[in-house]
Image (cartoon, rainbow, N blue to C red; front, side, top):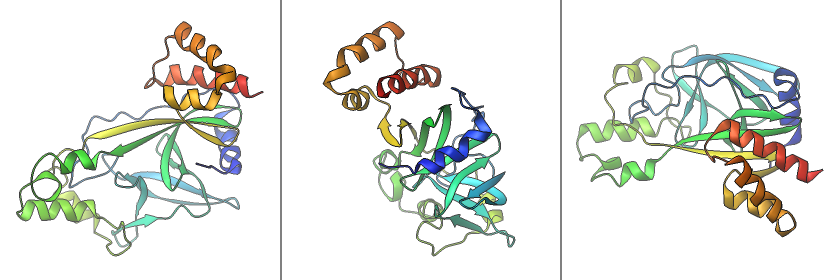
Length: 236
C-alpha cells in the first residue's frame, strides 16, 4: 500500500512536527442500515486539493468503502472522488485517502503518521440472519439495501431529507477499527504481525523488548504513538 509523500507534507503545517494526538469526536450514536455513516450528521468540512485549492461542504463518511459524501445545493447526496485530494477535514477531525479509503490522522511525528480506519462490518451484518443484510425479505430489507447502496456506483443521488426521515429505523452496523503506520511513505499494519514483518529479523529482539517494556496496546492511540516513535528510530 502506498500513500504519496506530498499528502503527509500538506498535513504538517496544521499539526506541528511532533507526536500530536488529534481531538477525537465523541461518537455516542450507532450507525445503522438507514444511516450507514461514521458521523451522526453531515458536518461542515473542507476538502483540500493538490494545487492549493479547497472546497467547503457538509461532509460525512459512508461506511461501505469509507468514501466521502457531501450534500449538494439541491439537497442530494453525492460521492466525492479521491482524485487530487490531499486532506479532508470534518469538524475537528483530519483524514487522508489511503488506497481510496478515508483514514483518520491520529498522531503525527515528522512526516510520519498513525492513522485509523473505521469501517462497517457488513459481512457480520449479512450473516446475522436471512434476507438482505440479515433481515427478512420485506420492505424494510429493501430500504436497508437501498440505503447501503447510496451512490456507491454513481447511479443514485438520494435526498438528505428522505434519508433523515428513516435515519433511526435501521439495524445497527458493527464497526471495525484498523490502525496503520505510515513511515517513510510505507504503510504498515499496526498489529504485532504487521510490525514484526516491518522490522525483520535484524530488529526482532529489540521490538520484542520494547513491546514487553511498554506493555503495548494495539487499539490504544497513545500506546501506538509511542510504538511509532520507536519504529521511526529503527528506520534512521
